[in-house]
Image (cartoon, rainbow, N blue to C red):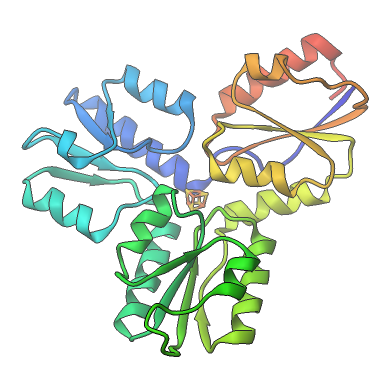
Length: 279
Ligand code: SF4
């Protein structure tokens, strides 16, 4: 089996910056509470737990006066206000691309537009963006776009934003579909890192693609989805061992934007030990 490394892969600028911030904070020796996983990768989370971080799902779990770190996915203004009101020391690892989406949603709302967020309603990034516009509506598919009606029945101009790690082609199609039905203003697009990685995957014409990353990583799952060949996802060596590579002569390998290069190299080493060094 020939292995082909796809580039770019792995950490994006937003993840690198969030991790640098977390590692700097860890040097103080103070216990840091991170609201949600800093990025969606279990290896990264385990590393930070080893450095003394505590991961919480709700601000109420952070003791008075403690330091709270907001993850790369961002938080809603209400969460920010609550942290301030409780006197927590706030550190913020929100990716600038996510912050840009927050600002656009807030601006659209302030201008009286109906905000539509293209994304997965359960994702932390989408929950944070929704907090910028109380009447925002989340849609995920073309069907959602076709079914979209406004709660009050009135026609309003629509302001469209997107979760940064969606399928870039889906977002473009949904925006086009919305623009056929409504007057829209849109900044809906995935971030550059997501787009670059998806473009490389779509251009790969081998037999199968292995995407390294955690199951709860949105950008990792999208890479697997946009592949034009069979695709597998694995977040650990055990998960790679469980994959049946039979019939694969050319295997492409990439990794999600939150997957450490150390795991990528370990995975390569493991695959070489199984299939020989044909890179
Ligand atoms: S995937 Fe994009 S939005 Fe998410 S952290 Fe990386 S650069 Fe930022």
